[in-house]
Length: 300
Ligand code: GDP
Ligand code: K
Ligand code: MG
Image (cartoon, rainbow, N blue to C red):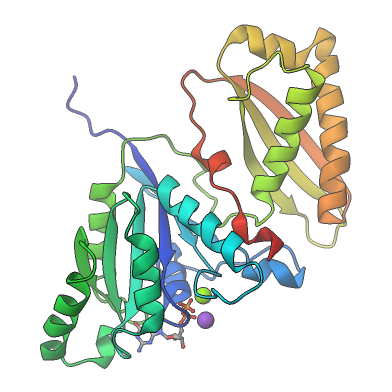
């Protein structure tokens, strides 16, 4: 008793200027190309999540695009959203390209990271392009600018040291539940908005008899091959049995109403027919980090 290892889970933000190898790293870690389900062009610029599930842990990786574009018209908004994201994740991987050395883009990101309390690792990528002797002075240069918790040189392309990095990540993430189903490797870009749409309906229709702290977990979004219908499975998570009763309503009437209204909104959002399967469950002290992590890239 008391000796078993506790399950860990964490949200890990990957940040770095373009072409340092963030996507290559994500793809290697997840083990296959991450496909974004929507074919709308702007979704490719959204935050991509890769979920790595093992027996001991679940690591949810977040690619943070946009941060390197301060001149963009949505620049301020994007940057604010990105720094908010930095505060809400458990760990930040600041990835740099050793093939190019420390540049303006790196300095800019480090400036943003300065006031963030979340631990930051320095991940030096593309070590396959560099003589080992050149690595140490480079590390020193970065270290004088930001107090990195760990410094890990890797080659995302060839795989060198990636396992070590994952072990380090594991040691920094907190105890926590498995947020996503084990077979899920990538998140739908619209996931957050869909969960918010359902949450909004639940709050509104119950006249806020359930607290704002209820969470909506999207278990599944998929589109069957050759069909126009998108299947969405979601769970409304409440903290007490009494709240569950309110959400379900008399003979399920409230659930039905929440589901119908949410489905209409989701259909508008996705531009497709939707089959929404809605569940409700009681989970005490549920703090759903997923609903706090806004999909800031969505309006880009
Ligand atoms: P991102 O913009 O940060 O997501 O960068 P990408 O993952 O798209 O990678 C940009 C380029 O760098 C691609 O051509 C990759 O093949 C290459 N690249 C990524 N990781 C490595 C690495 O470890 N070594 C080398 N030599 N090239 C890499
Ligand atoms: K790229
Ligand atoms: Mg990329």
